[in-house]
Length: 182
Image (cartoon, rainbow, N blue to C red; front, side):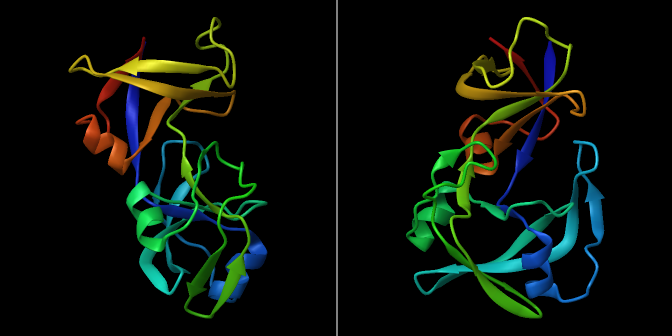
């Protein structure tokens, strides 16, 4: 089965409460839709800060969620000198706190910084011999093997392999290219 690659840069998922603290009553607006149904890159961006260091232009991904999570690259975590563990989305326990800044204010968010695991969004019943939360490897067109790829299964997903920008560069991958489960 050929799986299209989706490469992500650092970005933030915000709760309504955090969004309002940063943007006031400005609506969250769509810059472009993402492949996963209902998800989009918004026009809104924030600045994150830790240890007196900042990273600007962190894109907010919509829609708003019930938890705030900032997905970073390894180089971001090193620059900010924070603990951003390699985790599944939503697994934020004991991750670092960040100061989030928007045009209308700022807020400190506890345990919100992670580096997201490589993962495959798999539509339910597309591959019946693979279970949700299993870990697989994928093979690139150059026959490079990428290990520790987490499976996420839902009837609402579109088939896609998510990998961050740093990993994609290391494996010479481009958006839209295809990989296969080993």
